[in-house]
View (cartoon, rainbow, N blue to C red):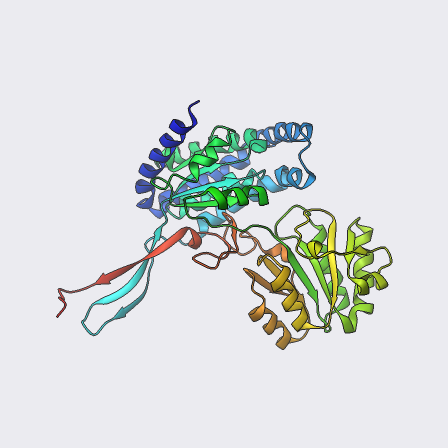
Amino acid sequence: MDIQQYMTEVGVQARDASRHIARADSNVKNEALNSLARAIRRNSTALLEANQRDLAAARSTGLEPAMIDRLTLTDKSVAAMAEGVEQVASLPDPVGEISELKFRPSGIQVGKMRVPLGVVGIIYEARPNVTADAAALCLKSGNAAILRGGSEAIHCNRAIAVLVQEALAASGLPLHAVQVIDTTDRAAVGHLITMREYVDVIVPRGGKGLISRLLAEARVPMIQHLDGNCHVYLDDEAVPEMAVRIVENAKTQRYGTCNTAESLLVARSRAAELLPPVAAMLQGKGVEIRGCAETRVLVAEAKPATEEDYAAEFLAPVISVKVVDGLDEAIGHINRYGSHHTDTIVTENYTKALRFLREVDSASVMVNASTRFADGFEYGLGAEIGISTDKIHARGPVGLEGLTSQKWVVLGTGQVRR
């Protein structure tokens, strides 16, 4: 295969399809999405079988546990995949929405119309559900999509791609509105991220290695986050039982996700009460604790934490712990060592909660809730195309609105400028 020629053909087809999908009727797009959801449910067994082939190959090559976790599909996750597509179909279509219309002294009305970005390239590792999520979100938001999944999920991605094509065909939409790159050659990524004439934005979903490469080589604008060092802060007015429950879920529900808690901060005045039961729960689940000197006094088995530990995204049963003086030090620590992804405070103090929400510089900031909720599905977006820690255009889970832009529109009745 001539990779450059292949990718150019994909780009040309995507650009042409983007013009058609941008003007597609909402009902037609919803019909395609509901058809895709039904096909996912109908072909659940086939998708799980394809996933098993991917998992067998991944294990034979020694893929790390966090990636195996992301790669794995279950009956529950396939059902969630279909439900996510249906949720996207049920959401209002943002394309063509006009807002902020205001009359000017000249008599014209000035406002903004929401429009598709055009062609969206998504590069992702492991997670095969991204193929369905990205296809659904791009389709509903009027964008053409070029999807390049990781080689470790090639069988499952191909199986989902077939279902997407069937849904597009059944609804009379252009087949090239969603294209899954059918090669594992890494050179395809290099072409995709530099095709400015065909691709309007790149959304990478993967580890630091992938993001670092794209940051260095991409010529197409990106919506991205580098890593997920998420924090839980146990305030001096935290309820102990709630603290244990939230830390347990935030850290141990899944280790390989970007919204998993990697750092725990505890207010000094309550550390002797709050930290031991939380630590016992974590250790009971096999989580290694790396803590400051005060942590190691309260938790004998804790290992010394380094500066690197406080900034780390472990993606493993490891957590850094630090005892802090209070809210000010907690906020300062998070803003220094965090990745601006997701952070939560456990407290019964309303004033402190509001300060935490205002002053923590992250894409998602929470009060008395697990960081694991930082997800497009949980936020009511139906699904997400990625999570952005950027501050321009889209921030946090990127759903339909994040895949659109706005243009100015002017409505007149014959006015001319004097």
